[in-house]
Image 1: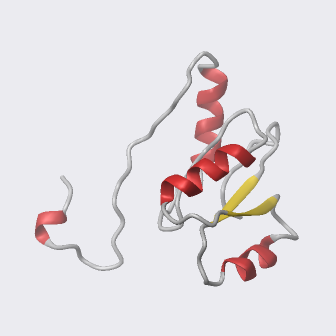
Image 2 (image 1 turned 30 degrees about the horizontal axis):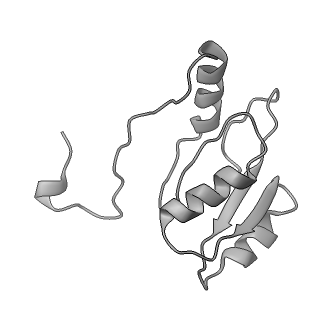
Length: 113
């Protein structure tokens, strides 16, 4: 998150939805709390859809960008969406191509063209 390019003109809120997991989420949030506008929201019901709904209820901004803990976003991710919002204020939803990232060499049948 620290490498993401964020236009100075926008106010950013980072919501982390803790979806009833027992992991290191609280430690990670505490580590970043001094340099990111980060807030944790607890959702007791499992599954991504429940986490997403909790985020929608808690978000305070005009626009919502959503990602997941297993996604690597490009450093221009926020900046690109910001330009899209400014350029098409009448739009209700935006999307981008998603490319898989593998730690090793994927199986031949998984390779993208």
